[in-house]
Length: 284
Image 1 (cartoon, rainbow, N blue to C red):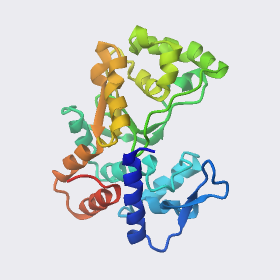
Image 2 (tube, rainbow, N blue to C red; image 1 turned 30 degrees about the horizontal axis):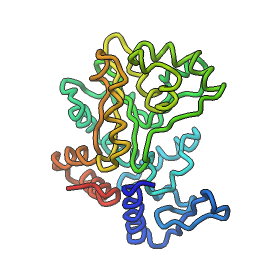
Image 3 (cartoon, rainbow, N blue to C red; image 1 turned 180 degrees about the vertical axis):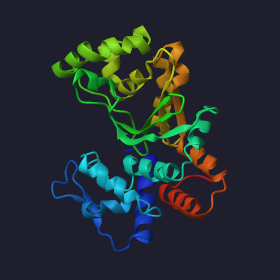
Image 4 (cartoon, rainbow, N blue to C red; image 1 turned 90 degrees about the horizontal axis):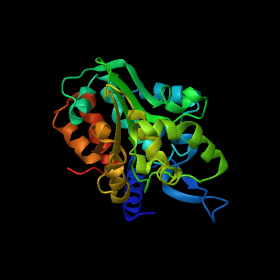
C-alpha cells in the first residue's frame, strides 16, 4: 500500500466516524485474515448504499439499476471505492445537465453533450464485445451531439493499473483480438504480448480511441498526489500513434474540483460538491 492510500484511508475512517457513527465497520478478508480484519474506512456490506452522497435522492435508482445488472463492484462498500467516487461526481452533473463542464476541461469547447447517451459502467461499445469476449467496462461514458465518444477510466487510491499473466488464455485473446486492434492505435514497438500484458488495463482502454475521424477519447481521472498511477496515466499516450495522442486525456481530481468550484453553484449542486470535497479530501 502506498503512503497516499494510507493517508486517504485514515481520512476516510475519520469521515465515516463523524458522518456515519452508527454504521458498523466492514471487514477486509485479505491474506492472513481469514475471519476478516475490522477496517474503519469500510462500511459493513449491508450498508454499502451509504457510500453514495445522498443529496440527490435519485442516485439510489442508479445504484439499484447497476446492482440488477450485476455491475456494482465487489468492494463498493469501501469508502475509497473508485466506482462510488465516479457516481458521486458525475451523477449530479448529469441530473442538472452540467456535463459540458467536463468537455471544457478536455478542451472540447464547441461540443454539447447528448444526455441520452450518458452511462455508468458502460461496455456496449467495447471492442471485445464484437468478438464475443468479456468486455472492457468503462466507469463512465457519454457522446456529444456531434458524435464524439468519451470513455472514462476512474482511479482513486489504486496504486497501479492492472497487468495480467502471460498464460494460454490471454495469449489466445491477444492473438485473436488485441494484436489486430492495437495495430490501428499502438506504436508497433509496443504492440507485442509482453508489453500488452504488462500494461493490460491501459492497453485495453487505449485501443478504444481507434477511429478514422478522431472522434473517440479515453480519459483517465486520477488524484495527482497518487503519484505512481498518475505517472502511468500521463505516460499512456506514449504508447499511441501520433494521430491519436490528443485523444488520450488525463485529468486530476483536484483540478476537476477547482473547475467545479469556479462555477459558483448554488442549492443542491453546491451542497453536493461541498460534501464530495469533504469526503474525498480534495485540495482547495
